[in-house]
Length: 337
Image 1: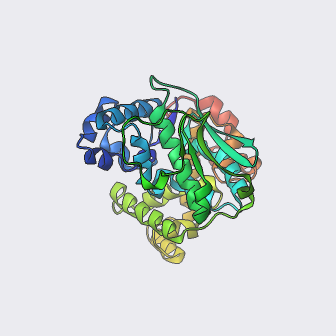
Image 2 (image 1 turned 120 degrees about the vertical axis):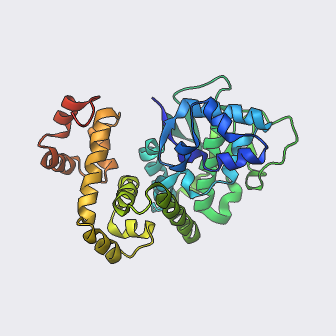
Image 3 (image 1 turned 90 degrees about the vertical axis):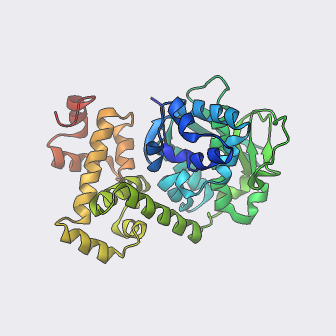
């Protein structure tokens, strides 16, 4: 099954309402609910989401609906992976990192690099299609890629281009200012392009964006896990693990707590950060071994291990079995068996 984080359509309900349509009705038509959108890290059907976006654009009478959606999105649209991409040493490193971990945001999309003269193209492709040829989904994906890269290069973004295979809309609609002068319709590919020389640039670190991300994360966690500090910590750990930078300092920052204060609060609840880290790693590992499609090596990397041997050794100490043996025994079976 092809899956995507529900955070990818952050702001959907608000925007649909602005067009005078009922977002709840549209969501239900394709088997979604508002509850699924509350946690941006809930995975939903990628194919059904593509159909939802096409139907929404038609209902709202806006053929570039998803560009309008992207224009209003904040850092939760890509979640922690988007934050980690921005923290890589260079744009070249950021591209490598994003290709390695894109499945954490969406499973079923691919990014290929192509050089055309002094320009680098990032071409998006999908493992599925629909009646429209994924018109709105391509807008969403290319728009989010554009947003991410423009944040990383700052004022240089004037040279950034957003490519869409579709024809330019016949209607004279107001294009979001963020994309004016940047869109190339009827392109040979969907995605973005920028000067090849940018690859050596160091991504800009936007402190305000970082604060906004953590503020939104705190509000979200308080909504999902009111008063449950351990659940909040485990939730953040699960999202930070793939970055390889999951530590008490990063988790404390996400909760707006000094690391020592966080540790004291956890000790008062008779647990520690280390115990919650182990618990979360085990839960994520078992879930992926049972139902995921990642190799054991990729799973180890996504759990923050630099060496698969260390992961295997730790997993065996937790369960008494190697990851491979555990998977052979429990794959596709409930965890409580």
